[in-house]
Length: 109
Image 1 (cartoon, rainbow, N blue to C red):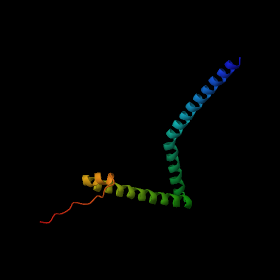
Image 2: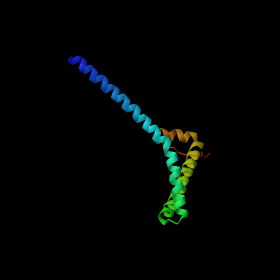
Image 3: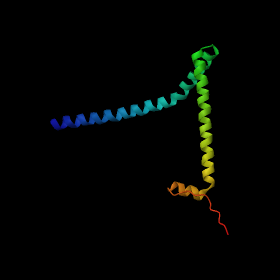
Image 4: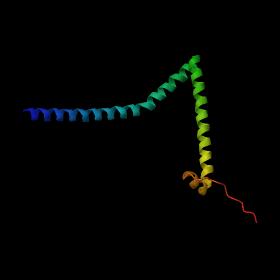
């Protein structure tokens, strides 16, 4: 009697864990799918409030555009750095392996 009760409790526990994991996965998927919709409504609200003269929203939109431009500049700089590093493959290999990446030596005759 005790063994069957223990087996029943273990089976119910395993079912509960599996159901909880499935529910968590579904909620995560719903949350990920809803993020773009929420962002678009938030953007629409901010634009409308700024058009109606809400100073706090205007300030937030200005700061957001400044932050977006700054992030775009940082991405551009990183891209340019990677392009420059990839032009010199031997130096790139040395840098990746922790060796001093000296530029080409000019030999004098």
